[in-house]
Picture 1 (spheres, helix red, strand yellow):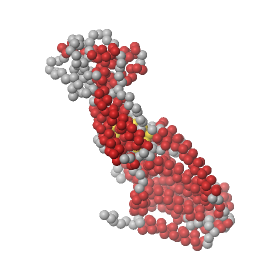
Picture 2: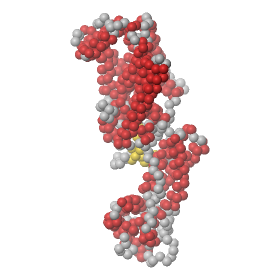
Picture 3: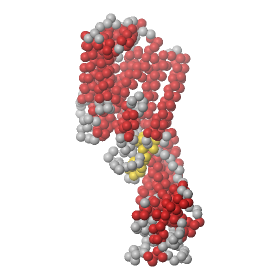
Picture 4: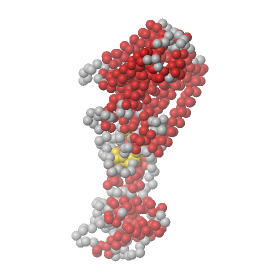
Length: 321
Length: 297
């Protein structure tokens, strides 16, 4: 049989498959009729055979190229991306992530770096006169001092909705960026964590020396636990990726990175969720004109939730069969 | 990863995938000149979506007397849009965003499987580092220059690559209508079978010959035609271009003539005696025309 006759004979099937591809591209294979799916699979398999034949018997290159493209196209319609399932993600976030974090060296490292730098700069800000100004700059110090000079209860309650959006956009964005920067051999993550810790520590230290301390501490108490934990978590997730490039565990660097990235992404997502919860509290509880004990109660409650998540769910247990 | 046959001497951008049907096929990986327009289209679309939704939120919440909350939601939506636009589209549109669909590219795993939600989200999170410094994408560009699959850091970490998925209309194989070619095809010995490399060279020549002027065609075709003329025992002075077309015709389109009144064929006498002649249209595609490979380059 000559090539031209073969092409003539097979042409009808290829055209049919092409039509089905167009149909599948508009409407995913999950929602097609079973008969159509079977027909698609059958046509695809025979197309694969045709491609093998074309390669072995040296069909003209334009025919082979056409077949390669059509196989690629049909392949992508037959094998589709797996969509999110709530149960998988719930299991990952509530079971896998805390279990993994309980023994995570990078979480400890991020924790030590963050709180070490935080307390160090807080102490320096209170004891060394010029320190805060060097770190924060005179302008920002002025702004902070003005912001907390009036009592919390007198804050404009109109702006809360806007602030909620702003906190989510800004803080959760910082968290995800911190995660992404961790990829650079972990150094990016360390730098960002260190920078955040020094800035926050200095602000805390500096404010504690002023008369605005009461207003300031009243404002930051409620959302503090979630937000500070979220920063450390995002940094730890980034470092896990970055350090996998150095400590490969005997694998190729890229393979080590891929494995670490799969583990780190849900952690970054937990960090993001914490940032969003912190934003909700920061917008609606922290500036609310309620007694301080309520805000302290929210802080205690959120700290308790975090303890439950990291220790209660995280403590190593045997995998149920 | 390991299942992929990726040769080190790869010079073009094609990537081989082995399907579960145990057939290997090739993709072209998409380079920066396809991915940048796709990204820019997505950026414009993101801005349009955000502006439109902000106006809608401002209107709805303004009517409800909560303009501040409307702005808050619009900022929160901006966060979702800027960090999850790509991840969600690539998950639910099988590796494509609107921009990627317009540019005919698709994200797939390096082993040829479709991507899953985690990979889609991860590679879009890591765009933050690929876009450095200052959204100039130098990090991503450098990273994609350093590997065979144009993978930016986000692709490397999530084990994905971006491939070109172009539609191509099947035009059938090229046919030659010139009567001289048809006549010449009759004179080629019936025992002739093109070797794979000869077939490839013929197809490549016929595909491109129309781009050359007549004299240039002769010049190009001569190198392959002259040994063929000697082999077939055809008279000198046959147009080399027509001869190659005729051989192409015989290799791909028509069978050897079965009529008995064709001119005497000196080629048959010059064949070595021990070589049995393959029958016309026989099963063995590799039979015939040994020793031709040298002159095909």
